[in-house]
Amino acid sequence: MIGNFPFVAVIMLIALGMYSLMFKKNLIKIAIGLTLLEGGVNLFLITLGYRKGGVAPIYTMAPEGVKMVLPTPQALCLTSIVIGVATTALVLSIAMILYKQYGTIETDEIRRLRG
Image (tube, rainbow, N blue to C red; front, side):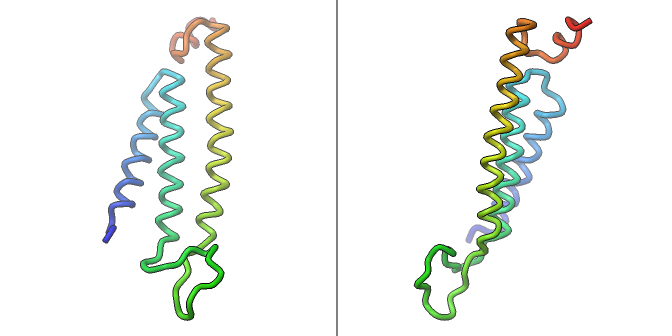
């Protein structure tokens, strides 16, 4: 039913994130690109663990012969979300410090003002 749509969404999210990281000069846009990239990686991990007709691994009274969904990608995604929140907070705090010091969040202008 879902076919290849999650993989197409993964490619689009990762491509948008990489584009933003490579070609945008605004630090806020770079942080958004980093978040898009992390979302694409998380979706990829969850898509790899998907099984058609699978039961959630938390369900302990599963009927006999029912396939369980892999719990490892879910655990990796939870860890990745926590790391992503910390990374985003770090990037945004650095952007705030640079704005207070230089008055701008454009990377080209900060590089020029530094001397």
